[in-house]
Length: 120
Image 1 (cartoon, rainbow, N blue to C red):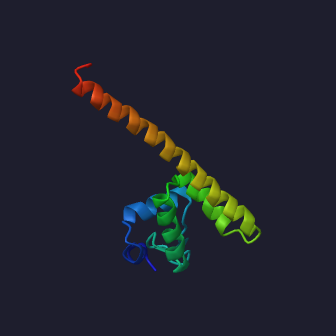
Image 2 (cartoon, one colour; image 1 turned 90 degrees about the vertical axis):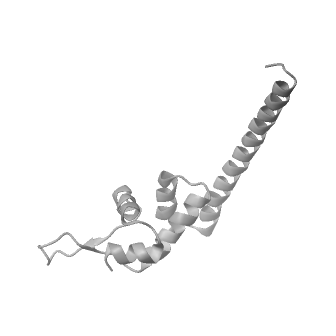
């Protein structure tokens, strides 16, 4: 399929898909027989990979982390335990961020009280 069809199926812009391709997250195949254009063919399996990318982004993974995640996820030699370890590591990182944000919230709420009391 062409990138426009991949865009429709994944609901991502062509620009985003090309960006992912430039980062090495996805790959289209050039038709070496056709010298008149630079069209690439994208396999239907990329839809699943792109959905993983979207889910990982939503879960807080950076694109660099997603690239490593995809390499390991589609590596047949990667054990299930290692895959679980990677996801658990990200869950722990998110939990730590939540705790940090809760501390920031406390400081901000305290600042509001100081402002109300005229201390600022």
